Image (cartoon, rainbow, N blue to C red; front, top):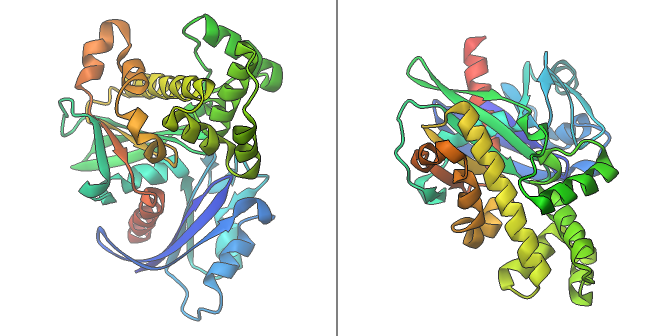
Length: 329
């Protein structure tokens, strides 16, 4: 069965054509498109499918936003995506949408051992609930619950829950965010734009001017990556503080989500940022904040925490979801 899988975010729309046999995925073709350059998803799908005369059996797209009744108004794009409209436009008989973190949750089991980096071994419960969190253009959360001999993923929009300040500097940061956005969510903070926001806030708070070389790197490329690279190199004290604050926030909310789900089966970290900051993620602010849950600290130490350093986990998950849905029809 050939399935077009998608991982559709505010920065990039990534598509892949898989041949799916059971849980085995064979990649046949792939492409990445700049999301902001297109008015909606249909032209991207048209380019990807091109002149192929044989249409795939299904299209399954993981999209950044809440999906209701096969429709999603994307969070970081001005798009309204409809599974029914996609099926009509592409002449593909089956099309499904699912939240992008739900897609990543479907893809957990397709990640090879070589792409799993254990941050905390813990004491895994083989049938315990599991948490999936991701930091990238935004921040997402999903879960996996054991049902009928296997894990069933489910979506959430928990990344848009309220940011919880923990110290005086956090309260000042909260007020700074509210002045710009009104509602201050984890999505505004545990993300690429969040790294930039934390850095800008700390520059103002410390009365520090951004060094010219760093300012140029932020203008010329990905500003969040420029801040993170300076932090990892130890070349700028404010960047170091910004990255550590970011990782503390990441760990705190990952722990909140794990605690709410009672994720004794494990916590899986996906998204584009984690693999790039692994040297700092593997010790210090992230795990300290993850575990800092008062009377539940020992419980948090027992939860396994693993980075999935597979950039295709969402694509693979969307393909596996498409296979499951097609088998039900």
